[in-house]
Length: 219
Picture 1 (cartoon, rainbow, N blue to C red):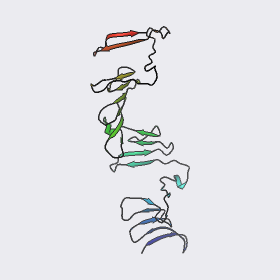
Picture 2 (cartoon, rainbow, N blue to C red; picture 1 turned 60 degrees about the vertical axis):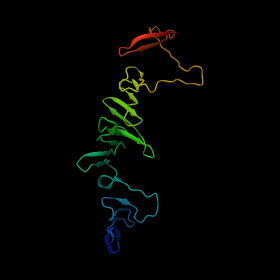
Picture 3 (cartoon, helix red, strand yellow; picture 1 turned 45 degrees about the vertical axis):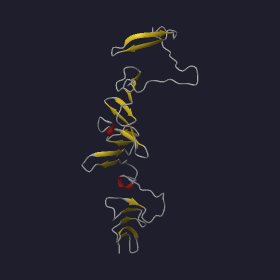
Picture 4 (tube, one colour; picture 1 turned 30 degrees about the horizontal axis):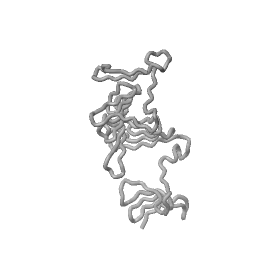
C-alpha cells in the first residue's frame, strides 16, 4: 500500500512515494528519504545495500545548475545561526556567519566552555583551548590556565599574564627541569649591551614583584 508519483506518460518514471510505514522516498530506489519512524530526519539510500552511499546537500544551485554558489547554514531553532559553510570558499564557521579560514570558531563565552574541548575516549578527562581578549589559553583539565600566549607573543606557563617572552610561574608543586643526554643542556645567547657581540651573556636572578636583581652571572 503506497502512494506513488510519476513523471511522463503512463508507465513513466517514479519520482516519489509514501509507503505503508510512512517513509517518504525520493527516486526509484529511495535515494533520498524521510524515515516515517524517526521524525525530523533526512536519510539516503533506502534500497541501496552498500556502506558508501552518500547524501548531498546543496549539490546544485540556481535553476539546478552550477553557476551560483550556495551556503549551508544550520540554525538553533530560534532564528540563530550555529554553523555556516561558505559555498564559495569551503570555509566552516561555528558561531560566526562569515568564516575567514577553513575552520573559524567564535568563542561562546570567556571560559573554556566557549572554546574547543578534547575529551579522551573513556570520558574521564578533557583538555581545552580558547581565545579571550587577545589571549590564547590552553588547559589540560578545562579549569586551570596551563599555557597562555599573549598578542605580543609572550608565552606563560602557569601564568595568564606572561611578562617576558617566556614566563614560567612556580606554584610550589612544580618547577623547571632541564634534562639532556648531551653536555649543552642550556644554551643562553644574548647581547646585553647591543654591541653586536654575543660574548657578554648574562644569566640574571631576580625575585619579588619588582623584579629586584639578586645576582647575576656574566660570561
